[in-house]
Structure formats: structure tokens, C-alpha cells
Image 1 (tube, one colour):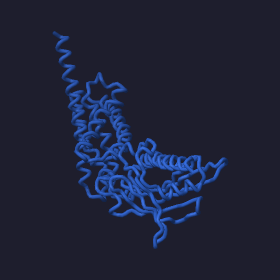
Image 2 (cartoon, rainbow, N blue to C red; image 1 turned 120 degrees about the vertical axis):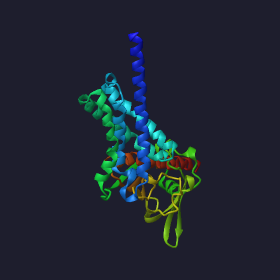
Image 3 (cartoon, helix red, strand yellow; image 1 turned 180 degrees about the horizontal axis):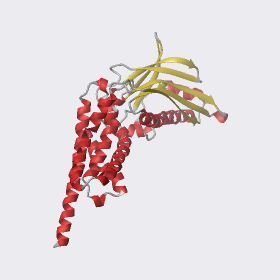
Image 4 (cartoon, rainbow, N blue to C red; image 1 turned 30 degrees about the horizontal axis):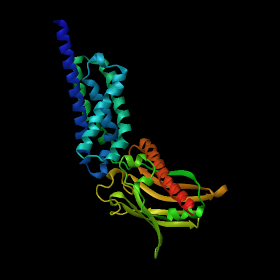
Length: 331
């Protein structure tokens, strides 16, 4: 009889813990909704209160409802991931976040949720089991953090990325492919993380002489389109254009609002291509991109954006390498 009663009690504790998991995930979704309703000047979902406070709280709540015997180090670190996973799924289902933001937030949220779980595990050592539920008041921490943040201007970071590839084709052929990149097919682009998480693929990039000078017209999937004004050009050697984005560049739904290029948090400044002839008719093709990151969590956002930026530039270089080598063989 005692064994049966013990098994029943353990089952009830496990069921009770899952309620804490569900409650933590639901709280995360509700906080995303509330933060999204705040004035843009308060940053809302891009504030430290949400980006840091919410996953920390979600991780902490996951641990509160767990039986003491389950609170091992591995449990404190990894159990919060279940709650964060449900929260992110809830944000996706309710269309509060798009795939790009979810993919960018996930690593940060998992780490901070684990931190919250570990901290709560330590705190629970000083509370009797019947008192632990009082710690649920930690749920208001993100809101308190938001108030403490105030309305300070966002820090800005200007970043430069450089990538290069060796192409088995002369510079003149590569130059032509760069300036007249038409009808780009998906199968011409190397496998890319940025496109897997939902960034639209490029369809066309063409330089045109106009009364205002040479202009680079770019067109991507989902109706994305923008221009770049050529600021320097040396035939078959180098070209630079500076981007211009307007209200029509990114139609509704084409990109997540928080990561739209030219927006409050991310802006692509310019792109340069440099072609350096090598032996045996080969050419070293280098691309240089400058962009701005403005967020309350630049310590995370800057390296994350750099990783995605390198991935995107490698994709573009891969496209020009394939097209140029095919053109060289045909010629």
C-alpha cells in the first residue's frame, strides 16, 4: 500500500510540475503581448526587460514547481528549455513573432532560462517546500526591469564584414556577373542559414545608368526591393554602392519588423566588391559590407548579426563564383 501511495504521490508531483511549465510558457507569451503594446519609445520586445527578464523568469518558474529530489544540476540547466520551447512555439502560433526573430532569440533565451533555473534552484535551498510557491512573484521582474530601464537612447554599433573567395574566371567576367545579376534561382544559391530562418532570397541585382548617376536595383522574394547609389567605381576592379530604403522597400510580412533592413534596429550602409587578378586566369573576389546595429542587447546582437552577415555574404559570393566559372567555361 505504501509503495502504491508513494507512486501516486510522485505522479501527482510530476503532473504539478508540468503545470508550472505550462504556466511559465503562457506567462512568456502574455509578456510578449504586453510588451508589444507599449509605445515604440519604450522599445517593448526589444527592451532588456523582455529580452533578458522574460527568459530568466520563465526558467525560474520552471524550477519552482519541481520536487526537491529532481533538482539536480542538469535539471536546473536544461528543464527550463522545455518551457522556453513552448513559449517560442506560442509566440509563433499567435503570430507575435516571425521565424527570423524566433531563430535569433532562441539561443539567448535558452541561456538566460538556464541561468534563471540555476538561480532559482539555489534560492529554493533556503525555502521550505510549502513556501516555495511565493517565489512565483518573480513573474513581475520583467516589468520592473522595464521601468528601471527608462527611455535611454539605444547604443549603436557600426560593423564591417569582409569575405572573399577565389574564382576560376577572369575579372571582366566576374564584373559583368556582379553588375547584371538577373533571374537568380534558388538552386543557384548555396545552402544558407539566413534563408533557412526566413530571410527572403535575392532574385535580381542590376546596375543602371540614370540621370542621378549609376544605381543598383535589388529585388528579393516577397516583394522586397531597394536601391543603392554607386559612390565609387573602377572598371573590372572595384565598385561600391550605398543603400537607400523607403517605406516600400519591405512590404508587410516580408521581414520581421525588428530586423527589417533600414529600420530602427538594423541598417545596411553599403557594399563594396573588389576584384584582384591572380595567376592562371583566376581572380580573388572580396565583398565588404558596413551596417549598423542598435539594440539594448548589443553584446548579443552584434555577434549574432555578424554570424548571419557572414553567412549571407558567403551565399552571394557563392552565386557569383558559380555564374562566373560557368560563363568562363562557356566562353
